[in-house]
Image 1 (cartoon, rainbow, N blue to C red):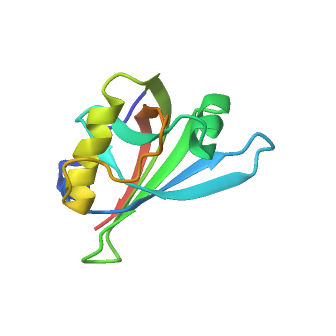
Image 2 (image 1 turned 90 degrees about the vertical axis):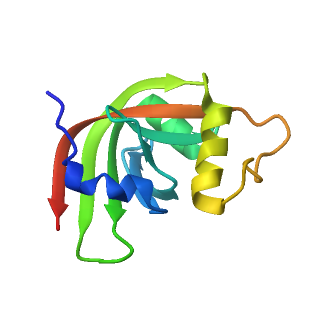
Length: 132
């Protein structure tokens, strides 16, 4: 049932592209957040802190939409619709440090708060729309 992300868009996951993540609030209204984005070849990966609105929304309703806009060509984009396949704490701290390297050029994520617990959402892509 899943759909494969076309290889010609893999560069959007390698660049410092900020994605927009749309989730659904408990009342059904949409919520959109700019995020750092990653792709492991099977799942789109979203890393957040336990208890944030994204975390609450995705536990309540696993459906998501992610949009990546190429910063070098705003007419080239990738829209991914899908749902959370897995929520895990395993490797989340290492993953946010990896993302800090990509997006900030820093080895360690500098914005963590005392007691913060990181979580990774693995999103299975069900529909791909693109231009470019």
